Image 1 (cartoon, rainbow, N blue to C red):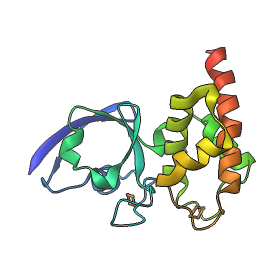
Image 2: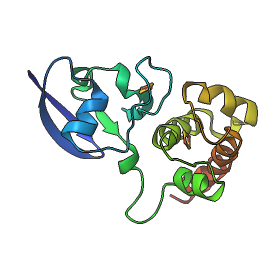
Image 3: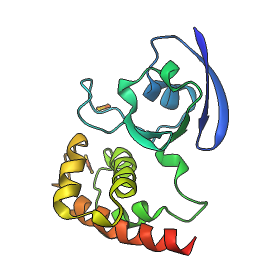
Image 4: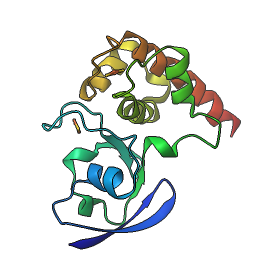
Length: 161
Ligand code: FES
Ligand code: FES
């Protein structure tokens, strides 16, 4: 057992876990943040994507101990009170989700994509960059529309800040 200290959605936490515990299980089982999902056991689906120090990572493919000292953001941490993150609003408005199981990981990956590509984002880039996130429901088309829509909204909201 080891104590892992990290910041999750802006809050400092210390959690005692077995050394083999994966980050996704620390989030879900110890912190009850169950928005982050598990869709596979081979690191393909991306349902478990969270941000680690601002970059998208698959939390099923990291030990919790490797996140010691890091800042983790999950899907539960991106809205500001009642105000959705622009990526969440764009997924809703473009009907980019059906069952919702892939959505937390999709949204966390998509925010990372927009942050890395900014204004250079086009449909081909979005499709290529979302290669690590699988969806069984949507056929991806509306997800791509949502990400491109959100890229515009995020630029506007960053400019307003
Ligand atoms: S649970 Fe499928 S990639 Fe992490
Ligand atoms: S919305 Fe169901 S898996 Fe993507």
